[in-house]
Image (cartoon, rainbow, N blue to C red):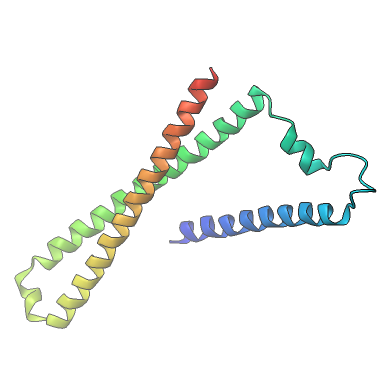
Length: 143
């Protein structure tokens, strides 16, 4: 759980950085009047100048490495969730548990929540895998 929290905190931090960068660029554009502007801003130059093949390849390689880690992490989480569900199914199969309806009901609800989490994790894994395949194809097309 702690690991997921760290990734989420990193995600929020990264999104904040991106937002601040966009905001700064937006502020620069607002301050620059059409008359006083002698040339394109840094943001405009970055948009106009295409990256060389090496830069694009490097970006795709970094993206591929990141996606491979995320896919691997998702696979590990799926495996752990499946094991948890199997253990719970064995626990729920105990006939003595049916004598304690409140406990059985609680365990049943937990298992249902775990199955929903597993579905969410599987969907995330599928999405990441598709994105990874797309990046791999782009790398192949670059040669």
